[in-house]
Length: 390
Image 1 (cartoon, rainbow, N blue to C red):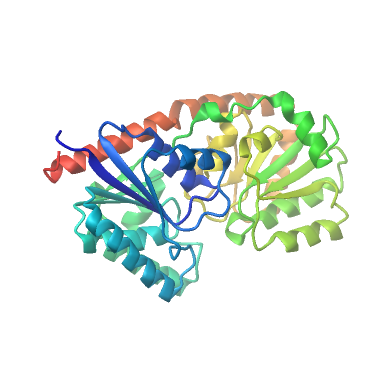
Image 2: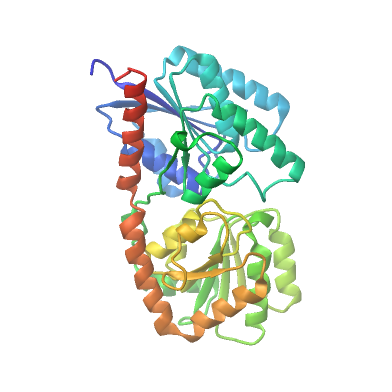
């Protein structure tokens, strides 16, 4: 090979969350002797500690496009598109790999305009239903169909996600690859003995079981259902605490609801945190009541630490959890079902420990960072060979 392969990864932001983590892991894991990497993102406000360290030590190029944002704003989106084009055109990139919906749309358009030979998109989400109004969803489907015409590969996080894309006539079977998310599992190996210190910090009684939800406090994540279940349990049991880690537009509403029910001291809102592994060490049970979810990466993180999980039976979650083996799947939008599942695991500690052990083994067999990165690298090579670039 006479020169390194030039790759641009484009994402809306590198804030705390699943997709930035996966982008970081891929960028860090790719062979530097073979690839020259540029990371392009919009403004990042709440980076995780690992992401901050990665950005400090990154041996590639980081470019911030201030107009590249998650919300749809016509003027800013047009400026972002133009800026992306003027980054990609002179950069002579061999591959543009976009991540998430907005960056995927603008980044792929800019890559097409700039004549980039290989264009890849990872949605990292499930925007084809459940997130927006029916009218907006129809527009998104039309846009994705158009973009798929010049996207060499779409990387789905689950088999279900691939089926959904095909059902909406987005891409073809041979242009959609399934690559499961991979985590740096050793990075979550937090000493569970640290529980007492975290409990003291949050005002939790030592030895008390803790049930938690980690995620954005937005409707699609279903935090209302978690709080409803928590309130009902807290009113009948004095030994359990509930923790919500995350920020969002529903936080004030949820805090008021817990306070009015007299559960303010045992339903704890921590806000956004950049120490997710440490917060995981606090939990005995993880709950994710999402109404729509592509993968639910936080469930993988929890299972990697032998924490049994309870989650909605939606999207790609059934491919992340083995029902009644590593966790419990619950119909979405049913606070009563979530309450019953939580109480069952609280009342059966032996079952809880067995599920946790099975969960840890399951994650180690399927969701490793090195496996994901190797799969991505093989895909790059396949497409480069097909375009006679390698």
